[in-house]
Image (cartoon, rainbow, N blue to C red):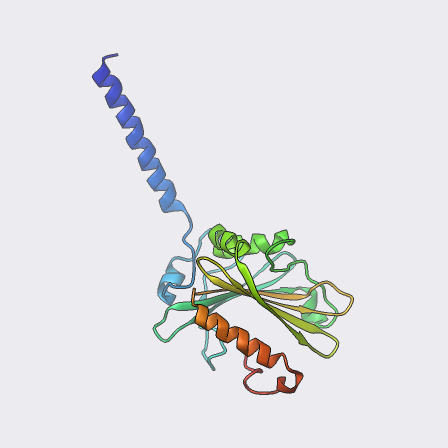
Length: 221
């Protein structure tokens, strides 16, 4: 084969490989992440996320209610995905809520399979990667724990943990019962705003005081 023909064949193969690469990239499911507008988030919802349908707008009764939400089932429990938008319609916080099926009938006697934490629970990691993408999971696993806040309750307890990642900030919340595994778990990915994260930490610390339990500041949805 002449050198020119060989070069043309190699170049054609390279062009084909590049075209295939672009096609695969275009087929990658889009991620719904903080920093996107609500309309972008809905439009780019990951088609591969079969456990949760595309989020829909929710009635906004107060600031404590999400703007968009989606419900599904996985890992032996119910999942809820919530999105909170700012005044410009940009996603600031996105939360995965996991509740075991048993919690629907026996809310004080249920145990969960999922714990959202940096290590030690593969199901929690799988859900984060499935709903928010492997990049978020990697950033979360590599994040720094800034504060852990314990909220004692009547026969139960809640634990909130705050994390600073490179790309996003994070919070986890776990409700647990004495003598049982953790029951209800939340995972939130936040826009990278360290001042807002410090504000959340201060609020959690304030509300961990039993005297503040019924205060409107601490009892919002």
